[in-house]
Length: 49
Image (cartoon, rainbow, N blue to C red; front, side, top):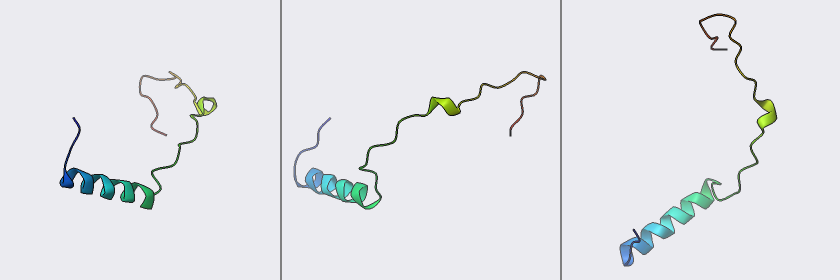
């Protein structure tokens, strides 16, 4: 769905400005899979920490 008209234009401008203001327009860093540690099954209750 694509908006048209003055309200859609205003909403797009506000969204773009907010994205710039909060730094959400930058690329995210790559996902680091080397930090993943699979859970161990030492007991039936998994540890939260």
